[in-house]
Image (cartoon, rainbow, N blue to C red; front, side):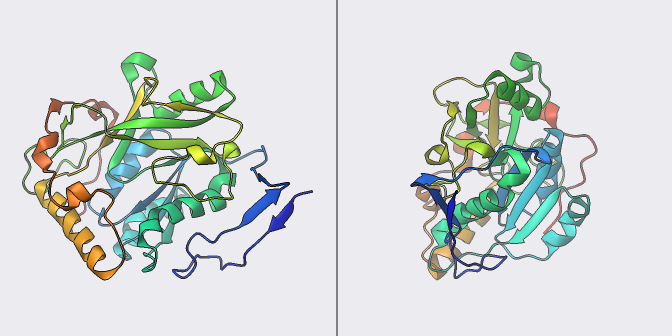
Length: 309
């Protein structure tokens, strides 16, 4: 019999309750989700701020890649997001949470959102990915023959029942010499040059192999949560799947992001995740090294125009 230790909490986590979630133990071992029928094979958790012009393109792209459900966390508090996302919410494709910073723990905002997602929605999906609204995932169609990421993931899942996590590399894209935000075309069509080498990884995890007793150690790595399973790490083993990380977009967008981080740093204990970028030691043009339009073939037709702020 599992002994369940619980801290009382409201249905919606407040700013005064960061990462103090349910703890479940049995003889000192983490509690795991039990296997069973789940309504979704592949879902996605993400937190966003100042992504209004790009959000619909990102959702449509990943619906096209086989993601069935989006658990989204609004860190900006802009009511327009509710209007933009309402069609997806009514279709049951999006769940939207308001998720402001905790002034006492602003560096944990994203990790707390991911932990909330695991705790509340892990039971609804077999696989759960965690990445940002400026990151786009797709398979290498020439190598795999699979037109979508979900097809590739199902192949991996069937070939290795012990597979618990995919750590997928991402490539940073530069501004493609756009000084201002293009009025048409969106993200994938307008930014076509990347860095030579991949920059980091993001994770897709199998929820039945995730321990719920701890929050992620970082927004990139879930290795400390994986038990009784195997990880395929794209940094060590070439995987036929990748992320495009539209790190800067235009110079205008890049400067807006730095200004946001500056305001957060002045008003809270927030430390920017990339101090080199914050201190303007990185420039958008430096990532314009390799022309790479491989994401274009996965872009859905008839995308709406970017939302203007």
